[in-house]
Amino acid sequence: MWTCSICQLPNADRHARFVAIDPESVIGDVNADGEFNISDIVIVQKWQLGVPDTELKDLRASDLCQDNRLDEFDLCLMIRELVEKNAESLKTEIIIKI
Image (cartoon, rainbow, N blue to C red):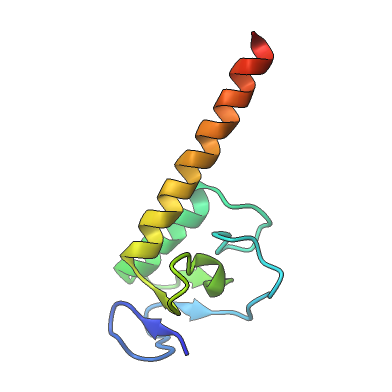
């Protein structure tokens, strides 16, 4: 069961619209576009702030803590994962150019 981190109600939908979850999803890819990037982090931030019509297409993809909750801890892990992903990409690019 999912718990809304804003109002603590199970499966609360007053803060966001939930759509069917794909079991083959990419970790962190809440907008279900096939990749994890900054747009996924922005969507989670908007959802946590209660911005109307914020849609999480894949809620499970955002649960990096694997505690069946979407909260600030998941957001922090998403940010760290994206920074590490980009840092690794940058290292590869520098090595290739040298």
